[in-house]
Image 1 (cartoon, rainbow, N blue to C red):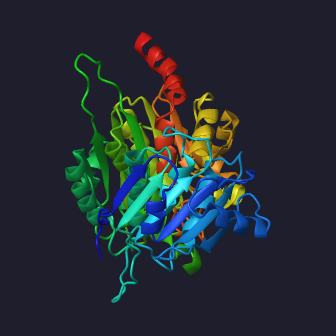
Image 2: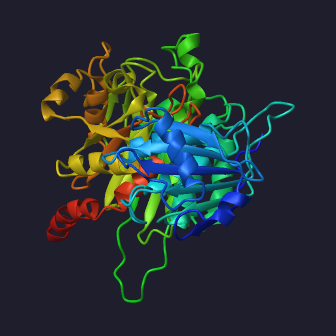
Length: 512
C-alpha cells in the first residue's frame, strides 16, 4: 500500500460563456448550477427549452438536484442543482456533491460544469463553479486500498468548466485535502512514525521544504518530558517531532517575515495507554493523526498555490501504546517550557504531545500558531461531526476564524476560554493537571491546558477537529474521512483581517 497518493493526470479547462452546443455534443455529462428562483435560467443554452419543460414538470426546491438525458449523439446526462441566492459555501459544496454523486456509477470521461448564477468570481470561497470542481475532484480522487482486486476508480479524461474560477488554486486546495484524507486513511501497520517520516521526506523533496527531525533522544535534550512520556510506551521508540519549512522567494529588499506555524497532532495509533480504550472506541484510532495530516495537506496546498509568506508545519508523531514503560496516572512530568504536569488519564495523550510541540514551536517566535487535533469527544458532543471547534488567546481572532469557516465551507464555532477554568486545573503535585476525569467541558479545559504552553505574546488558535470523520461524508466529500481543516486554513491565511489581527502583537513584541 502506497504511503502517498498518485498525482492527478486529467485535463481541466476553463472556458468563457455558457456551455456551447459543440461542448454539449462532445461531453458525456453536464453539471448546471442554476438560481433557484429564476424563471428561465436555461435561456440561450442548447436544449434550453427541453430543460425548461423538465424543470416545470415537478416543483424544484432550493438545494435540490434533478437530472435528465438529452437527445445528443452521446446521450449526455444533465444534472441540475437549484442553488438558493443566499447559499453559503457549505450549501454550495453540499449541492455540488449531491450533483456529482449522480454521475459516479456512469463514470463519464468528459464532464462539463457551469454556474448560471451571476454571483461569484475567481476570489469567492468558493465560486459556484468552484464548488463543482471541488466536488468532482473529491469524487475522482484515489483512496488507499489493500484489496487484491481494487474497485475501478473514476478517472475522467477532461473537465471543462464555464464560469469564473481560479483553477490552479482550486486544484491545490483539493490536492492538499486529498493528501490529508489519504494519510488519515492509512492503516496503522502502514503509517507509523517511522514510515510517516519517510512519506514526509518525499513530500519535502517534491515541494522544496526544509525538513528537520527531532527524535526521542533529541526531544529529551530539549526537556520535552510531556511528549516523551507518551512515546516511551511504544516498542519501536520511533516517535519524533518533525518540522517542515516552506519559504517562498522574497522580493528583493523586502524584510523577512515571521512564519505562520501549523501544529498537528500525529498520534498514529491510540490504545488509550494504561487507561485502555474499549474495542469499539479503539477501532478507528489510526485516524488520531488527522491533525498532522491537515497541517501537511494545508502546507502542500499553500505551496502549490504559491502562498507569498513563510509557513512551518510542526508534526508531533508518536503512538500511545501499552507496555511496561508506558506512562501512568499520577506521573509528574516536565514540559519543554518548564511547566510540570500531573498525569490524570493516559488517554489524554494528545494534549501531552501538543504541549511540548507548542512550547518548542514558540521558541522560534512565529507570527501565529494554529494547531489541529482530534482532541476531545466533548467537542463532538457539543457540535456533532458537522462542525469543528476553535479556541483562541486573541479575542479579535474569534470572528475571523468563524468567518474563514463560513467562506471555506468547513464550518467552525468559537468556544470561550475563560481564565477562571484554570482554577479547576490546579494540581496538588504539579503546576497543572492534565485533565479532569468527569469529562464535562473537556474541550474547553483542553484548550486552557494547551494555552499554558504557547509563548507569551504569540497569537494562537486551536482547532478541535470534531468533523475530521463523519459517516456519509460532509459537504462535497463522500468519504468518512473528510480532510476538514485544509480548506479552512487556506481561507484563513488568505484573509487580510487575519493578518491585521496579528500586527498589534508584533508591534508590542518589537517595543518590548
